[in-house]
Length: 181
Image 1 (tube, one colour):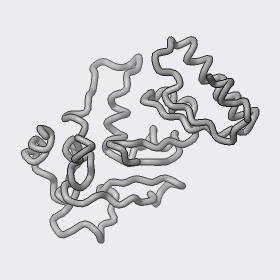
Image 2: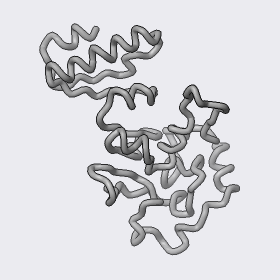
Image 3: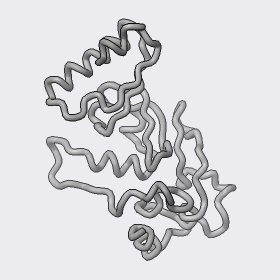
Image 4: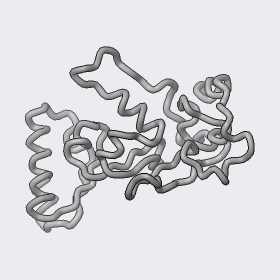
C-alpha cells in the first residue's frame, strides 16, 4: 500500500494509523520506510496515531486533539517534556513504560460530539477546570516562552478575556454532572 501511495512521488503522505494491529517487528519496518521517504525524497509526512511512542520517535511536530479540536501543538520534544494542556499531560501520564507500576486513566468519559459540552470540551474531565472553562471556549495562544508552540487552554489566558470570577476552581459537583451526560 505504501508503494502504491509513492508511485507519483507526492510531496505529502498522510498515514492514518499505519502500524495499528502490527507486531513490533513489522511496525519498526513500516516506521523505517516512512523515515526513509522523509529523508530521501523530501516527502512530508502527516502521521495520525494514538501511539505516543511512535510520535516521540518519528515526528518533529505534534498536534494533540481532543474531541475534534487541536488543544496543543508544537515541537514533539517540547510537548512531551513540558505539556501545556491538561489533556496532553493526562495523555502522557497514561502511557505505559517499563517503569510503570500502576495504570493511569483520565477520569470521566469522552464527550458526546453531537452535543459537546459548552466551553472547553475537556472541562468535565479536567483536574484544573475553572469556572470560565465551563462557559467559554478557550482562545488559541502562542506560548511566549517557546517557539511555534500553541495551546488552547484558559490556564494560559489571555487574562483580559477571562470574566471576573472565571479563574475560580470549577466545583467538582459540576464536573460530576457533566460526566454523566
